Amino acid sequence: MYLYKVGEVHVKIGLPTYYVNSAFTFVRTFIIKNLDDNFKDKEQYLKEIVAVEKIIDMNLDALTSSYREEELGKFLSMSKVEKNILVGLKKFNSYVNYFLAGALAIVAFFAIGLFVYDIYLLFFTDIKIEKGVLTVLGSLLVLWASIELIHEEINHLQGKGFAIGAFIMLAMAALIRKVLIYSLSSDKSEELLIIAGVIVGLAIAYWLVGASKRSSLS
Image 1: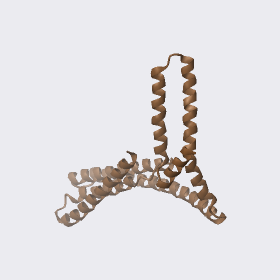
Image 2: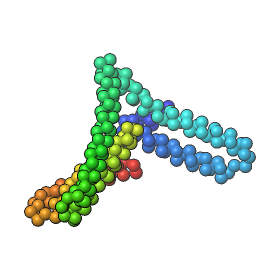
Image 3: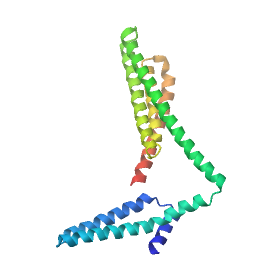
Image 4: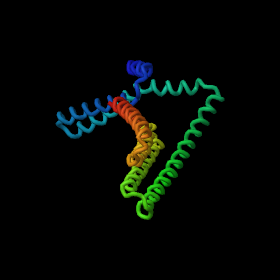
């Protein structure tokens, strides 16, 4: 009952379950290490390990039962229409995620085409060598960002969080490509300043997303 009440408090303050699991992992490791440092009889030691594992798992189950009841209570309190809508939205969300993954694959395919086209312009047209190299480098940057975005979307489909940072990275890559191209033109100074400001804003947003993720993990 004490552990159940503790779990209720955790639910009320919104403590994520992985904090509880991490704490129990620490306790489990601490106890097993002490048993390992002080055992004399191997047979008794194995029995103690089994007993400790059972006790810890039973306590963890009692502590997290409040989370399960909270989730179940929310679901059971819904009407039949609300449940159908919730299930339908989950299915629709899955379909949209798969559609997004396919769309990203198409974007990566066109990024490869853009890279090949820039290579063609570099070798088979009268484009200046410095502009051609920078254009190819920019296309390669966009292709790399697209691949990174596909990787993050695969992680999202496997249950991980949505990686907004990858989208910011792709936008930065596209803008940096423009900067590389415009840097050789003297009449594009105003556009360069605007793009540079946008890139700085995106860089700050990317840093904030990363800082938020690091603080949540710690």
